[in-house]
Image 1: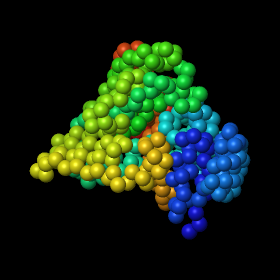
Image 2 (image 1 turned 60 degrees about the vertical axis):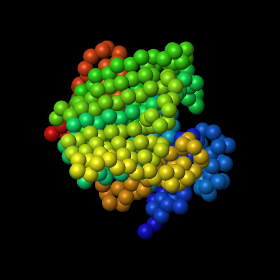
Image 3 (image 1 turned 180 degrees about the vertical axis):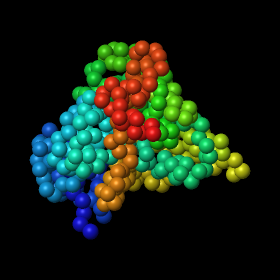
Image 4 (image 1 turned 135 degrees about the vertical axis):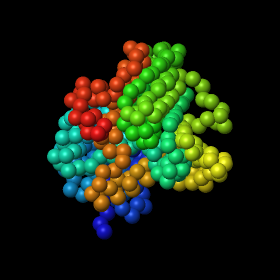
Length: 362
């Protein structure tokens, strides 16, 4: 079988997928694109592919089947629209969008052009979270009553890149996208949100937004979730809690996955407490050292995208999953701002996505 052709747009975070595609039996990196001409050329030389500074060239390249987007968040809608109109499949890093105004057009374009989209929610594709999901699908926790997820990080000195430094980085979207997606993975579409948050001194000094937040979520059955993110405070001790974590609490067992330390823990009625640590995979998942890049996770979701294209099915998380996460993030922001419970389907309806909410709720 001939390999699928991959193009990568944005070589900051995108370098992880460039590296992750190396050696794939399903994919071949065909071209990279970045506004930094020198970076694009050097990357292409290192990975033996073509390069460009123009997304239009990727879109018209007949050797490319899928384009992966790693550009600043506010540009995702524009780039997705262009890629889908060209009939290319797409991978888009999280958050999928920063508002829902382009949602109806993206849904229409996806259906009209017959293309598929995978949202790059990388936590789903880390070993500990994949082990947790396998246990969930096997029924290990029984009836799930609560899911709690967090993503915490010390961002008091700002983030890399001009988009994150002076008031342009909304941590509801940049940070809570991971834990909201994890909770939704288990509870299904979120129905309502109640959230609170404060602004740290570091964020206020940069004219930044709320950066310490907690939110309670419910689904249509009444099961509950909690997401948390703290970006204006000091890191906790690494043994206390991980950067990203998810706990699924059921009537037969509780499952906890951690990142980036590869630990997975569960406590099951009749079996007791057990734990796993796949730390031997560290070099494969983080070949650049530390936990700076998500090479292993990106490699895993690239393979999942390839299988979906070959089998003619939607990858997960797909466009609908991504739009619902964005609606939930908007609801969290609104709840923090106005101090009341927000109904997520109403947020979808405001942007012309009411039919989507009705279809998913059936």
